[in-house]
Length: 315
Length: 174
Image 1 (spheres, rainbow over the protein chains, first blue to last red):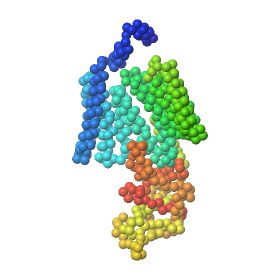
Image 2: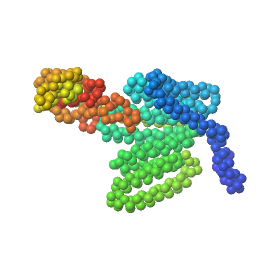
Image 3: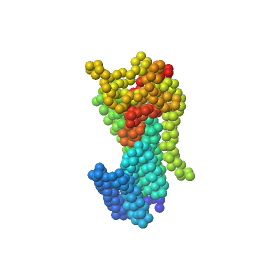
Image 4: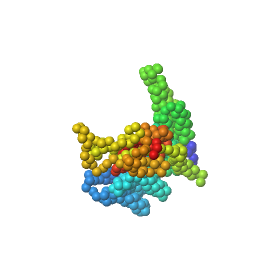
């Protein structure tokens, strides 16, 4: 039975009132998570547990920080990260719950840059660029080994940090405005990179791939369009092309996240253009009416595009 | 292999970005060739405890005594005295120099050198969003032409503190 047949069967069952929406959703969720509701519950509990653990460690560190020796500070921060990593490896070896492994790896990834920063401060080592470099190397190697969600997100976060840090180091001798422009162009490139990563991740067909790639699509489109809009001047003209391309891309990739980001930035673009070029000539009250009408029109267009091209297989 | 093309492209994008920025920064720097050395002084504070400070008047460096309200010289008590240095723009090094050695030297005290270089303090840059900055970028100076490329320079300082450095001027002849 292929997908079309299955969907038409579902439609027929629904028409005959043989199946309810809740039953259908429950069957879908079961397949999506691979296990039952217990798995979802355990995931939530592990996440809450890990968050409480982190808050506890941070509160403990804060309370006794001044009384601790340098070695104790390093052991508490970097040591906890390393310990958490090895705990995750042990759980992984024992073949127990994947959620617990991800939680332990997550704690390790969060504590790693904090631990490294504290270690360098204690050794009075100035070169802070080393922190994202080490964190990226650890996350990247772990991603290559374990191919899981935690190290995917850690690699992206540390990679972004490393990129900005290297650009910052390279441009210290440049004039402030040129330097700012380079940071904006870097942010635009980073936005496109996030969209590409979203595309790669969704094609890996992981259980977490769909929602995470939606997040990357939205973050990428917003980052790219936001940075482009901040440049102004001739970029204000080019922006209309960028935002149109983003809408077309959303249809091609069938991504609701890209469509939402694109639509949102059309509205922001209209507000910016009106305030910069028309508000003084036509007056703010009329400008607001025009913006309102355009926003309704853009919203209507977005809903129609979503219905016609995306809603069947959205991400 | 074909399946991995998007991943390879994704990995290459940041690397290409870094290479492009490096080229933007370093290629114009290769064309910079400052012709004039400059004179600077460290710890030229007008503290009474120093007893004197250096200043450029009519193209010459002079040592000006600090006097009290009654016009009597102040007896210096500070161990740290103003120290003159010449920065060699060709070798990117500093050498200490005495006032006597500068007797026949003409100093141009304008901000811009005759070949239109100026010295910019880099202490304003605190990294990205004040979060990811590195300390050493704040404590540095650059020899810059216009608003474009600049050459990072390291001057003699007291406790790596560039607040104590005064640029007196460009050396026209020696």
